[in-house]
Image (tube, rainbow, N blue to C red; front, side, top):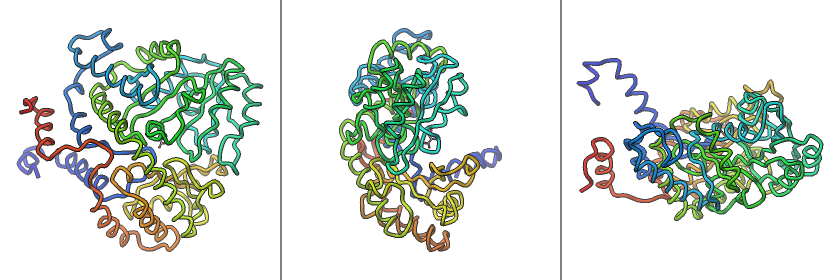
Length: 441
Ligand code: DSN
């Protein structure tokens, strides 16, 4: 491929090969189950290649510091409306370019250095940006961890209310990266408000479950602010967002997004984000319901195979995640590597009983079923995947042998579901528009 170009410019070969090999491997040959990833529809991907990727837009729509943005301004407002409708609020900021930037914006807008933030413990799912090691710490806020109830696999509500009342933080932060049951938003927002704190909910992992109405919208339960990325259960382009309940909070965060954390906000993602928002409006409920069925089925099947699945006493999971404890099977690091050798992609994860020094080989593995759901897999496929995983984790079969079977299995699931469909001819036409601005005839 591209032989004459590579003959003239040999350094190109490595770049091309790595990019193409990655794309074929992860998109066609793997069972992708990293809980924070997903894939866009072909329509969203093609629109993502638009010319806005080359442009600059500091400031808010229609009040920019640069010219040339008349279509970008309207597109941004349109995307805000689509996402706002999905989240039941008019106040949506799409300029944060990641979930971490969205979080940093809220921390800076609503708390001062030296003030306190009460957060979920790291081993129980707080995102690194909620901690002293991440943006929270960099902005000088004090991290105070809520007590966690391992039996309930959730925040200990009574003890956390007491902690909030005693420590009087500026922020209470729920949500995060590892969680299978909804956090107690109502109870803790009441406690937060009783000490004049704001409750921020990091919905990055569950945004697609919220927009699909299978997970309660925290803004309707008492949260003041929702932050998120736009590419986990919500299968959009990589990016971030902030949604607030009130105009007052929206104004506060908007003043911080630019000029503090974002100059240009990577404009080409707005189109793909709006398309994905519409896909979620029309197909998001079916998609989210299937995610939950798939997660529960996978968890049950893994448990039946003798793998220790967290949350058994509570039905294993209410989210897209399944958490397994593989300490007795060689640990999270070793098993995640063996699974990768079989083209099954997951990540090792700390669990609440792990110590900080266990970070390189924690007990857990975190599994997310959102992407494989988008590739059209259902309950029967979850059982097949559980069997593949058992053969690696319990039976210690040769991963190379299983890899061949995984590649065969994936061949049946190469089309994106729960999204807009376009024909091959339309794909090519859109590609030509994006590459050469050829008119769509
Ligand atoms: N660290 C990511 C995750 O995998 O959950 C979120 O940014």
